Image 1 (cartoon, helix red, strand yellow):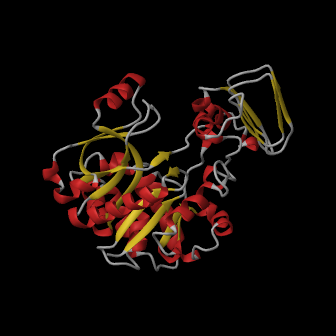
Image 2 (cartoon, one colour):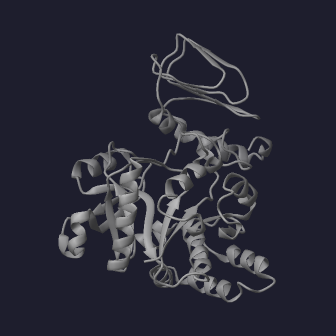
Image 3 (tube, one colour):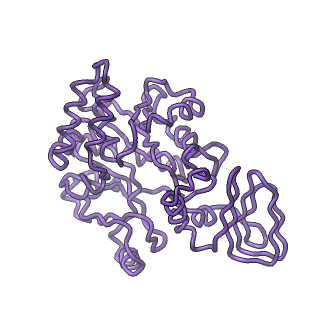
Length: 362
């Protein structure tokens, strides 16, 4: 069974402004661990895949950063989008590219570039189970994680406890997906957690190239037609312009909404590893080691009579006195200050700046 890894490295990471910017987005910065987010993701995959079998899809504007941060990945393994169109188009482009090198029964394991995983050995085992199940069930097999709190930022998937759907794979934690739910409100998230049959959707999944093409053709036929034309022109000397023209015609749609929620051959491996998408500064605070005052302090910072704060300095000295529950983050060009619990609104600030064309800080 041939397997390849595909890392999705698009996105701006606006929730991590000002440290994450259009020139240097979240996946290319240091947040947790020694490396950048994408370096840590590749290192996590190295025991499972040769570097020659790790592919990365990202906007062409990220190519230089990818080559700089990931010199072990062959340059031909960088799949370049003209610009982002959400996850369904980026995966469709990746699938037709991979089909130039691999047969249709090759297992493609798809992962975001900017998540945190604990218990890496368990993670590896769950990935291998998803690959085995994708081959045996001819389906899309995602990794889910049991919720530890009623989180409203994550997507959820409801699973069936009927072993008839998956046979002997049931003993390995494989379940039939019953329904998907995107980012519920607080009351619904509590209900999901209490029910016991909902898992967090990690966005990680395995499937064969043939099965992905079939799903694209069935559930996103307009995208499938555009990518058929792209595939026919992969060797055309005007391919970059053709690809850009086709992307302009595409709807922006996620693979979850466009395929996963509609397909009847989606399965879930109940993950036994720790996971977070590290989606906000609040989540980074939750995951980080605290000092005696329950503060997370990074860089050139002094905190006096202050508690429950996240203060991170990369450029400037920062001093805080007599405050609590604050997030203070600097960068070369800006500082953001917000109350803990409000970090999910940082993107609103970025959107406001973009509307007002305050682009020099983005």
